[in-house]
Image (cartoon, rainbow, N blue to C red; front, side):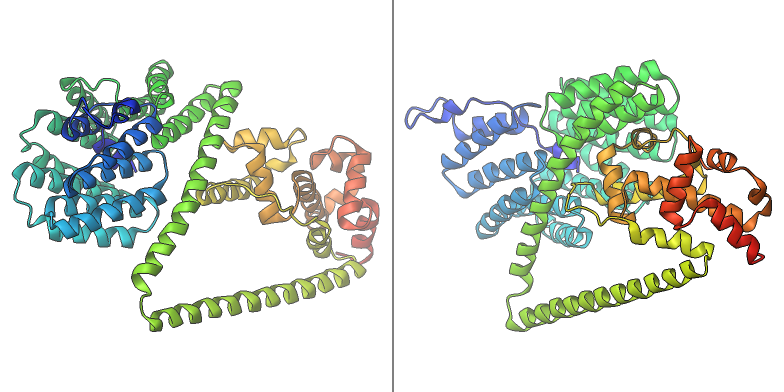
Amino acid sequence: MRQHYYLFLSFLLSYSLFSQSTDRKYSFDSIYNKLAREKTDSNTDSALKTADSLYKIAQNDIQRIQSQMITSQLLQQKGKKDQAIQIALKAYDIAQNNENKEWQAKILGHLSSLYRDSGLNEKGKEYLHKALEVSKKIVNKDESYRFQGNVYQELSYYSKNEQKITDAITNLKKGNLYFEKISDVQSKNFLLATNMELLGSNFFSLKQIDSSLYYYNKGLDHLNQINFKESALTGFIYNGLGEIYLYLGMYEKAIDYLHKAYLLGEESDFFALKEKNYLILMRYYKETGNQKEYLTINEKYLALTSQLEIAKKNTTTTLIRDLNHQEMKSQKKLLLLTFIISLLVIIIVVSFYIYHKKRKRDLLNFEKILLTHDANKNVENSFSKVQHPSAETTNMAFETEERLLKELKLFEKKLLFLNENISLASLAVEFSTNTKYLSHILRKQYHKDFSTYINELKINYILEKLKTEKKYRQYKISYMASECGFSTHSKFTSVFRQIAGITPSQYIKYLENNKL
């Protein structure tokens, strides 16, 4: 996601500059060059207005392409990839009609990155392949070097997404060879700095700390040479250095760099920088035991990810519409799609029916087990008493949901639920999340609230102990209550009966009478 944040430099230019219908102070080229080269890490909305006004005063196709590409990159910076894609496609249509190979290659590369960011790797690679074909016809040497370097940079993203870190590093080093040939000093140093930051990140993934530090600092050197000391790219490098020192346990150095990165992120509209800052800061505050600051950053992170999820949903809608437009022009394809959708609906309906039929059969089995007082019934039947999850929705990312499910499985395996003082809030902090997400997972995946979830784990634990370890049947009820994490005898008995359907004494008597 960071690649096109790096390649695009924006600046804050007063919108009123374009309000004059005559006697404009600056030409299109001078305004465009400032908008493309000068830095603004704040007020992207103002920059979007500037880009829109730039399009209105464009006098030829190349100027229209330039203004649209800046608009697309600004929209990507704000996380609005659906709109960014639409603007880029319009620019590509103009470039095709104009037969401008340089801009065709740039736009195709930009679209490759946008589709990759949206999780459509195959679509992204398709655009990258098209870009490579077009790039063979680029005449301008600097443009050719810049594009070839960008292609290797883009390939490094695909390699990293596939966990091929060494391949990613190789691609970045190949890209450096092309960037070094660029004659424009400012462009060369900035592009090299982007690759140095990415090399630092990839080497850190391999835990090669010395190499990671070397490349991060090389990136800062390149930025210093062109006076880009406070750019968003600088923020990513500071963040990377802070993460390294956090990993090494050097907390003072870590927070120094993380604080610098945080300030640059808060001043900007770079969602990717803000997200990375929040994630690393949460780790820092958790490790240093600063729960107050952890919760503060966590709230910022939740607000940001909510915006990203909304943007992601909009992007998905746009991509589906775009793919339909490109791939379903014929009636045959439309009929095929209709058939596939109908088949999916049938599969869903049949699966739903099978699931509920199985559920009903399971409930009947539970009732039979209850009549014979079998312990397995007591464990499983508790699910029939759980309330259905509410209609509450959340913008939690799929990766976060998977991580929390793994955390819960490990939590159960280690029997940490036996802790008498376990609470929703303390478990949320332990999982590096918040109570809202954790509650959502329990309702969605377990169909129960936190209290029911914990109580069932405790009771199922003692049920199994009573069944498999006969010495437990000799213990006092108060001991068993303490063993599975209940504060009082009465609380334990009440919950036991609620879940198992009988009292602890009745269950023990049943086991003894049936010689189990």
